[in-house]
Length: 186
Image (tube, rainbow, N blue to C red; front, side, top):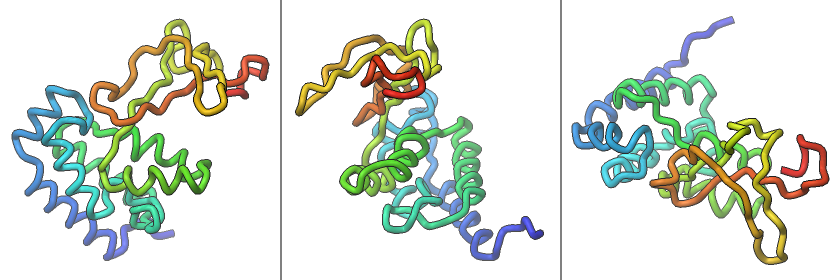
């Protein structure tokens, strides 16, 4: 079995490295250090859009949703190169958490509404899983969302809402059926 990158993959990785060497500025690094590993600041938003315009924010996504149909390994290497150059791990809640769930489980309407915008670096999500006394243990979620027809009434507490200070949307985990077994109704 051959685990080496193809010539096309090698060229892509070199292209990413060259782009990062040119586009990652001291101002971007300073902003990332100040805000944390997010892309909500002015410099990072500009950078994310340029980076994403090449399909590099979501390289393993299908082309129809803004990806490159690349392998998971290419996705990993691109993320690793970005983290190395910025000197901090860059995890994008939209591209690396919310988006893949929407891609695999979302309705066609939801996919159309969010995936291309995520892949283009236009929007970012906050991650709302962690709760007092439960951490990120989703089986013990207490926050509830009650269906009121055209909206949900949400009650409860969250802590450590990753990226909430710069997010456009909140990727929120809540209990929608309090009578369901703990691993369901979320």
